[in-house]
Length: 213
Ligand code: NHR
Ligand code: GAR
Picture 1 (cartoon, rainbow, N blue to C red):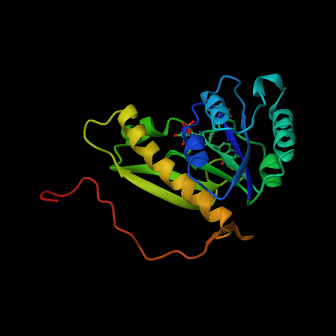
Picture 2: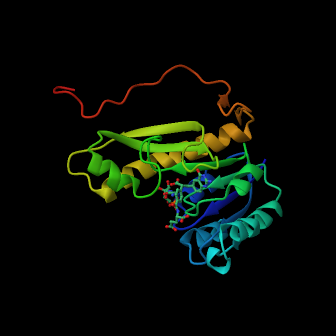
Picture 3: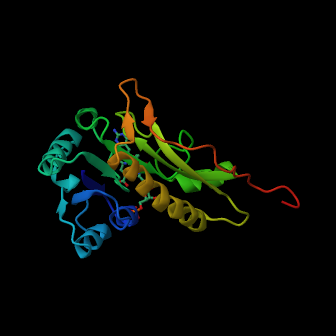
């Protein structure tokens, strides 16, 4: 299985994927920002990198066409958005339907879009988290593959909450990619997720815990 990872910044999710010992050949890490820190991390791990700078293109269609050309040179089975910050056009998404996944820093369908941790704090939710999903043309509504929940604690700010969520992102993203690489995960034609070999229900997260809990 061959994968291409798209990033825009720090690249900690990308690094978690590269370091997870997955049965995946990471052919290339591509950033839309030349200064993305994740590019250096990828190189230091021996993975090829490329930049497709969105500022060099007039309009999303032209950028996405250049991005697709860079991706298709590697003939990937899976294209992974790992902190990739540009909304993709419908034609781009359709080209990679069923082999394009994203990690979103919220429990979708709550808090799609940007600034999810600040919005979760403002809403007063007691449970927050992250979601891996197949990408569809409409942003952040694609079929959900796996989610992890964390408590929102008294005194949390954006930094503390995002760090707690990020630790779970680094667990569930490699898990989802492993399922895909093992042929256990696919997007059905009806838009639902098929995952083979799932065992029984795990523990529940209750936040805040009742007194004495
Ligand atoms: N594209 C499609 N068509 N569908 C999705 O589900 C996508 C997508 C592209 C990216 C990631 C997503 C997230 O997890 C993602 C999912 C960027 C924006 C955004 O508004 C929104 C959602 C996501 C990523 N980006 C601004 C834009 O104008 C730029 C913001 C910036 O550069 O900082 O593209 O949250
Ligand atoms: C992650 O929290 C990821 O879920 C989020 O940005 C961070 C990237 O960190 N993605 C988005 O907000 C997509 N719009 P990373 O570069 O260290 O993986």
